[in-house]
Image (tube, rainbow, N blue to C red; front, side, top):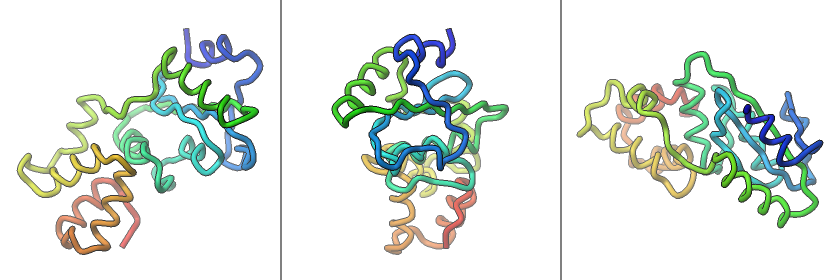
Length: 176
């Protein structure tokens, strides 16, 4: 059974399939789902400012979202990837939280892990004892948004030019 079939089964006639970011309601609470090759990688709840992560790609990063780094990595290192976005509009924050919790139990999408082959690509070119390796590991285990952490470390002077340039290139960040 595909994800869309599971979603329709669980929440009949409520699944939206937005194609553009501006199709996400700014006022309503939502449950948002991003799948990669029919596997949920993000299942969350919130308003448009959080739900827009389902439209992140190589050119767009949702700042401040816990899974922004993971979505970015999936976009950079997943060949022949098929991403699909889904929304469920909710009557309240409580309903959104309840649906999100149920979907985590039924389909997943709550883990922040990457397949081994993706991790290999991410760390390719960095020695295990290098600063770049350590910074990427720390960003992956951040309790906030790993991309925002990396950018802050750069602004604060913690990441020096060479390390910053290597990480910036690896994550294809457009940031000075």
